[in-house]
Each structure stands twice: as C-alpha cells, then as structure tokens.
Image (cartoon, rainbow, N blue to C red):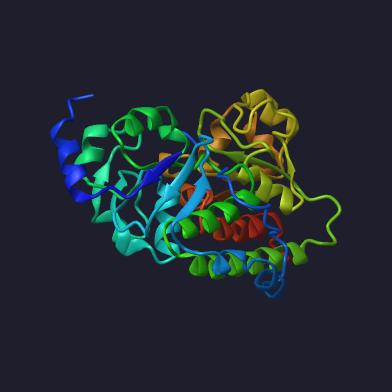
Length: 325
C-alpha cells in the first residue's frame, strides 16, 4: 500500500540523494456510469462521491496498487493531456504544478512547467516536489522507477469506453478533492449524451463509417472509446471485428468496405477530401463521391476527457446531418 503526502523536509532529502536515472493512443472505480441517464436520474444515482469522506482516501489505481492519499494534493503533476483537461474541468486547475508537453487545453495549462509525456524523468519528478503525480497508459512503464524514489504516482490507464471516461472523471475528481464538482460535470455530460442518443433511438441501421487516425490508415475499432461513440450513434464501423482497439487497415480494405462517411482526425497533417481522391480507388468510395468527408479535431475526439461529448456531437452531425443541425 502506498501512502501519499510527503513532508517538505523528506522531499528535500530525497532530492539530494537522487542520481541521474511516438505518441500513443480504465481507471478503477465504482460501477460503470450509464451515459444515457437523464440529468435527474444522474443526480439521483451518482451522489455517492459527494457523501464519501474526502481524505484520507484509499483508492486502487490501474497498476493494482492500493493508494492512500492523506490530504488534498496541492501540487499535482499531470503526464496526460486527458488528465490535465479533467483536472481543470473539475476545478483543480490551481493545484496543477506541471503538465506534459501535449497538454494544450485549457489555455491556463499551456503556461505551466512541462514534463515529458514519453519516458518521464524521475529526477525532474523529485525536483517538482509533487503531492501527486498522475500517469496515463503511456507512462505505465515508468511507474516503478518513480515509486522506487518515493514519488506519489497514481496510474490511470486509458479509458476503453464512454462509461469508463465518465468513471475516470469521477475518480480524478475524488483524488484531487473535487468529487462534488466532478459529479456535476458527469451529470451534465450524461444529459448531453442522452439527448444525442434520443435523436437516433429509432435508427435501425446507421451509415457505414471509417475513422482515419493517421494517413497510415490506423483507425478505431468498436472496442475503443472513440469506436464506442460511433456505436452509440448506431454507425456501422468498417473496422468492426479487428483484433485490436486501434487497428491498421489496408487501402484495399477501406475501398472494398466502401464507407458512406469518413471522419478525418489527421486533417492537420494535410489529409483532405482532395488528397483522398488521389489515393488509388478512393475516388469511387461512397463518402468521397458524396463529399461526406468530415475533419475532426483529434485533441477533442482522441482524448478520453470532458470534451468527448463535443466530439460525439460532431460525429452525430456528420452521420445524420438531417437530424443534427
């Protein structure tokens, strides 16, 4: 069992004894949240966090470790853009001391000291004198090295479903001392998700869709949280049946499966409907022929945080322009 909250003198001694030691795409908590619950239902069923004692708090992180957080952390280091967004969204922004170099939202995070997203530096971690370090999936391999130095690491692996994104927000709200605020945020998100689901409730078979993560044709299967949003919208994902959550398709497979809608998360890298037409055979794909190729902001759609509902709304408009204006 790990206990967090180190006295300043202990941190200083630890710092004195330290010697020098491709971006990828669930945290543990209670039962999975129902994303289609109404705000009233959410308020009635999601009030557990607000009634629990704030600190000391014992929680299990994604490494399986039982973590004891003695008091509200006042110096939090986030190594995940999604975690950074969650911290600010639940009202813990003033407690954030440093963020990774990809944490570009909200704007207040940009001005903070930066830490490495990949291969984080334990020595820098010590120097920051954190009360809490939050790692995501990318930093999982560094957990033991940081903990060996007594650093207070909490690992929250990337959410695999919409429900687990909501669970993560609740969990990060609790460990940062903002359980009530997280509860309000999740209730609001559930309400928006429910409103979208209601508009497609009578859809029996949505359009076929291809979500392009990279021009190397990496995409999202239904088992990813992005794919889960497409499933919620009743879209037929051409990557269904893939062996991984983020598979790589071939150009021939995309052409053969002929998606009716293409969502481009790599538009910032020069990919557009014009460049798709230049790919062999792609000009005849239904989505390209009809012009149903829609760019999506990867910072919004690919981060398992508060803005996934914005992405869901964007997906809904692309899939059902007649239902979402």
